[in-house]
Image (cartoon, rainbow, N blue to C red; front, side, top):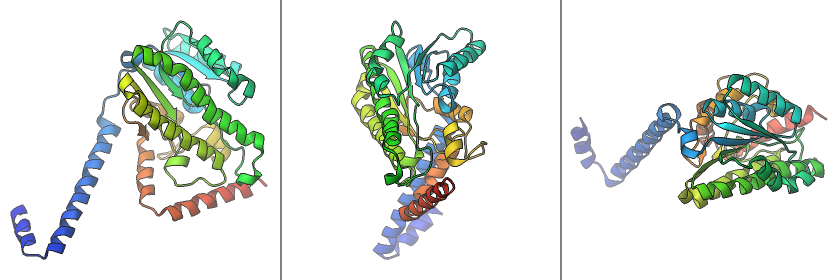
Length: 319
């Protein structure tokens, strides 16, 4: 059959043959990418994080949502934990819950408010004190905040958007800067930065502009660090979730329950663990990656209009 098809092509004009050949290449590329996606999502074995990077993990924003779920999953992997969050009461509660389930897990806690200018200036000192005597092999930069309500750029109070910059951008940078030195010395480590579909999957996120911009910074920071430190044995990755049922999405998007395309924190973290140490950017939860694929097929102007309509609807419901 193939020889018949080739023979048929030989009798056709050159332009027709070229179009067919390009179509074949496009189909081949799509098929290979589909197989690659299937392998990464369902067949590839996760790394042994403790063996690959070390026995301690530091997680920011560790008392709720994705951060808390990461803490449980890393404890399952046999890692000891340094939990960082601003609420000391929640830190103690989560620490107790994890140790009840994983008795051999060692846990340190650090109360740190990234939105505070005073504490932000002391991040390096506070992280160094919390990590004294331990080697942090895995860093999960999960802490992040967004607007309390959808607002146009000129409507956002300066203190609100500066807090977003301090938490999402400066906090992540300072924690990474503090931890990466030890990883360089040991010639191994994994840094996972939690990005957002708001800055990568869709071309814009109107009425949440500063949040989206800080998450775009996280994506570029991750990619650059991946290139800078790959030869040092350090794997840097930006993970790009779409909607996950967290306190933040509940408040902003009124999402209360998980579904096929809206992950629970636990399902997201389970998927995320499987991707640590591989590609520099990934969408670990496979239904999210499907959404990203279909989003790429749509015109950016259509996506812009859709996101604007969502932002306006949310704004109108709060004024």
